[in-house]
Image (cartoon, rainbow, N blue to C red; front, side, top):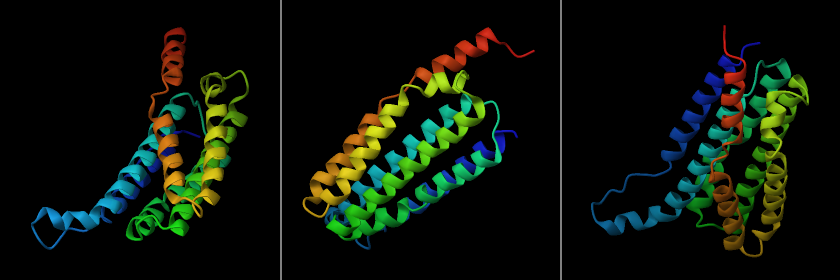
Length: 200
C-alpha cells in the first residue's frame, strides 16, 4: 500500500489537534495586561504540548521518508499513535486550568508515556515489514535507545507528580528539549540512498 494517504491523514489530524489546543487560550474580556495573568499557566502547558506535537510530526515525517510501503498493521499502529496524541488538548487544558495540580500533571505524563509507547510500536511495525537490512532499519537504529530512555523518564515522572509536580514537569520539558535537537541521520541516509538508487 502507498504511504501517501497515511502521511496526509496524519498531517490533517495533527493540524486539528493543534487547533483544538489553541482554543484553550480563551480571549480575555478586558484590555489590560493583568487580564493575561490567568492565561499564563495554560499558555505554558500549551507551549509544551505544541512542542510535543511538533516533535512527533517531525519524527513521523522523517520516518516515512525511509519507508517504501505500509501494511494494514502500519495503518492501525498509526491510528493507535494518533489516539493518544488526540488526548493532548484534554490533558493540557485540565493541567493548565488547575495550575499544575498533582493528578492532572500525572495524567499528562500518562498520555505522554502512552504516546511514546505507541510511536515505538509504530516504528517496530514498520521495521517488521521492511526487514533488518532496510534503509529504515539503518536510519532509526540510533533512536531506539532514545525512545526507551524517554519512556522510562515518563514512567518515573508519573508517580513523582504526586510528590513534586514541578519536578515531573521538569522531566517532561527535559525530554521535549532532548528530542528538539534535530535528528539528521534519517535525512542523510535517505538522500544518500536516493543518490545511489536514482528514480528511473
